[in-house]
Picture 1 (tube, rainbow, N blue to C red):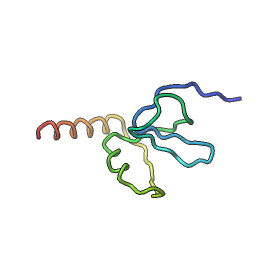
Picture 2 (cartoon, rainbow, N blue to C red):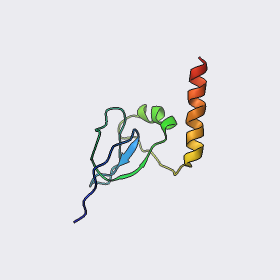
Picture 3 (cartoon, one colour):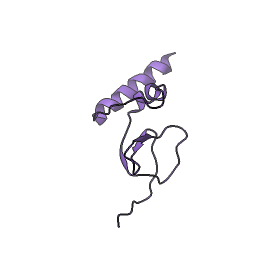
Length: 82
């Protein structure tokens, strides 16, 4: 029997329930537990994701952590200038 260790859920976590259809957790996510996680959507992409209609086919690709951190820092820098 496989048991999952309960752990915190990050913004943008991608969980896979038994039916195999991914669930992407946003602001209203639970704090612990859930289904197995396969990754996390980059923070810069969450606003675009949130605007997609239900049932929209979404493709994932592996990102580079350092590049995604730099994208997020640039975005924060832009909005801090306003």
